[in-house]
Amino acid sequence: MTSKVSVCQNAFDIYIYIYIYIYIYIYIYVYVYINISKHSLKFFLTETSGETNFTEFDGIATVDNIEIGHCDNINVKAKPKQDWEILKQRPTHIDWYTHNCVKTQHILKANLNNLKQHLNQTEGLHVLQRMNGCEWDDESNKVTGFIQYGYDGEDLLTLDLQTKTWTSPKAQADVKKYLTETDTRRTDLMKAFLMSECPDLLQTYVRSDKSFLERTERPSVSFLQKTPSSPVCCHATGFYPDRADLFWRKDGKEIHEGVEKGQILPNHDGTFQMSSELNVSLIKHEDWRRYDCVFQLSGLTEDIVSTLNKTQIQTNWGKKSQPFCPIGPVVGGAAGVVLLLVISGVLYCCWRNRNGEKQGNHTQSFQILFDCNNICYFSFRLPAC
Image 1 (cartoon, one colour):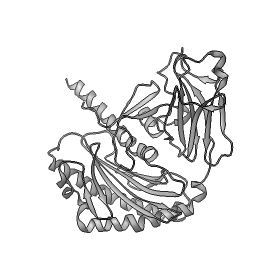
Image 2 (cartoon, one colour):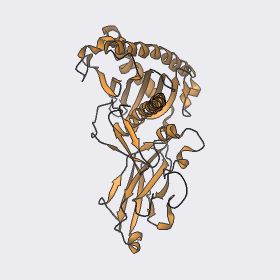
Image 3 (cartoon, rainbow, N blue to C red):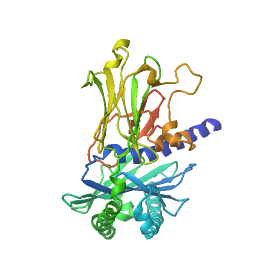
Image 4 (cartoon, one colour):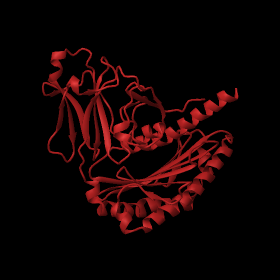
């Protein structure tokens, strides 16, 4: 019995850890509609309680959906993620992030403890998340701010900056009084930061690192297939920016029948990847050359076209190895397969949102279920272990 409980707890810990990162990355790269004239500065903060092998607190900052820094309760000093010129020129920015990382950790910890007491959930593992930030349109100069809370994988509170009111989809509308930031004074301070200081920081980052944000990186494109009867996956990885398209053609014309298109996902190095599958089970061998995979990227004048060719397909079929989930090209030499799959964006898998996309709903939660069958599924609740 003890062994079973231990295994169950370890599995649940892994689900929680994956869920935290999937929440962050899916939101960053899938749920946000990206406009070339819009820029964003966002902060993703996560506090956990209960017995777990992972960090209690994590904070991630992004500019235009590119991670610029990270901190946690073990590594309190904020660490730059990318080669940002502004962070080299003004190291005081790192000190500012470090200070806010420590301060926010204490706030979220207190909030989580208050919520658990209020909901009578003092036992077990629980997660409180906060996402806040601002967007700036460099054409209209319009600025918008936002802040949302999530608890145990569900929406908790959202602040309307116009009316300075907090709303909750939960039945317990009084939950806001258990979060320290929801009092009138702190709400005013938060609005001032989101509508003034945050946009100023964002504009500084964009203007100082414009060449970095506007760079173009070509991808490598390859064909992947699990078994001879499986769909062929056209996979492009290593491209930047994420304004890209990938589709199949037959005789030079785009096709949709028998095609399953994946979403753009992040790699660990700040580039992106995407894939599109073609059902080849009914295609005659002599007709394969009539099909090609086309990759288009903003900033590239020419398409990258790859003609369907059986000799170019990569597969583990017939080999004595692990189930086919190629992660090497993206992950490199880092360790920890589960974490790598998450941070690299899950190289080969496409994702499906079973509940449909909600544009503008910033707080989403996920359960990840993947079986190396070419598809990663995300649902909106963690399993009861």
